[in-house]
Each structure stands twice: as C-alpha cells, then as structure tokens.
Length: 216
Ligand code: ATP
Image: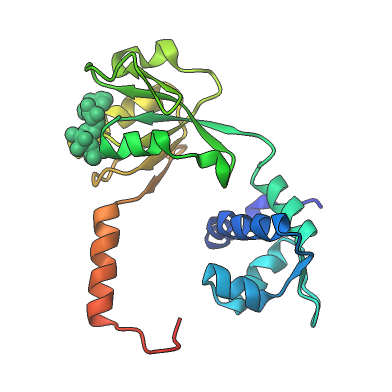
C-alpha cells in the first residue's frame, strides 16, 4: 500500500509502536484476527480512537470479523521499518544508562544500542551488556556513520552541551531522559522522558482524580 506518511497525525504515529507490539504478540500466538474491542482492552486506547487510527493505514475492520492480524503486522513492519535495525548511541553510562545497556530492545522492536559514551572514568574501555563504552571526547572518532539517534542519560547540567555536540556530529533524534529541557535546531527531534515527573504525575492523579470502578 502506498502510504502518505505526512497524513498520519502525530498522535496516531506515536501509538504505532504500541499497536505493533500487541499485534506481533497475537501473531506469534497464531491468531488470525483481532477486534477493535480486544485491541482496545489490551493497549488501553479507546476503540473509537483505534478505528480512526487504523483508517489512516487503510486497515478497515469488518463488522463481526475485526482486523486481519497478518495484514496489520506487515503494515506496521513496513511503516515502522521493522525489517531494518536502527542503531542508537547511549550517552551517560550511570545507573539508568547501564540498565538500558542490559535491556534487550530488539525483543519488542528493532532498535539496538550499538555504542555508548561516558566521560573519562573506569567504565570507558569496558563492554556493558555487549555494548562498547568509549570516552565522550572521542565521539566523532568512534561513531559509526549509520548512528544518528541518541539516548541521553547524563546528569541534567551536562545535557545541553552534549546535545550540541551530538547535533554537530550529525544526530537528528534525541531521547532525553534528563530533566533538562534542551534547545535544538528545527531539524532535530527531541522526545523527553522524565521518569520522576511521570511517577509524580501518577501519584497526583491517583490522589486527585481517583478512578471509579469499571472506568478505564
Ligand atoms: P543515573 O542518573 O543514570 O542514575 P548516576 O546517578 O549513576 O546516573 P549521574 O551523575 O546522573 O550518575 O551520571 C550519569 C552518567 O553520565 C555517569 O556515568 C556519568 O559519568 C556520565 N556523565 C556525566 N557527565 C558527563 C559528560 N559531560 N559526558 C558524558 N558522560 C557524562
């Protein structure tokens, strides 16, 4: 199918990996079809949103049948470039960074941390979870040509200077786990994940917006 990527709203695009993960689980269990209700229960997105999202992919569910799992899977594979592994660099091999190096990203999606950097210390020169750690001062020297996405797990005060350096080296995507809000040029995309803020928001919501039973 010829898909005009520009027409998929960003909110829909962000849900694609979620759908992909669930659909590939169904596929490995040998399931042939899935209803929007089943999908909705599993990924916790309301079924009207799922139907709207899927209509952008040209996947039109049939009443009483649902969606064809094989079709969806091949669509997601193609759209998310799952046939190609995207190699990523990780900067900052502290507690969080080390956990990511041990985490098997390829299990659920095709990204792989290929190389890691830290400032001068005992981790430099080691190999953690199969990933070599180099000194950040030697970024350009060791960086493979096909790596232009980075995970940033350095202390907040180091984030901006490192981001500037990465952009200078040709990076176009940064997953920023530091609490710092970094400024980048327009051609660079930053996604920001602050675990402490997310946890705090969850606790606040539990306190002030308690869910009623049966509500999603
Ligand atoms: P985390 O926040 O991941 O739990 P931590 O508490 O172990 O980490 P931090 O002080 O947050 O340690 O630093 C995270 C990692 O970033 C450390 O390994 C540190 O050496 C590294 N780091 C700090 N400054 C820089 C820098 N300028 N360039 C590269 N790496 C850096």
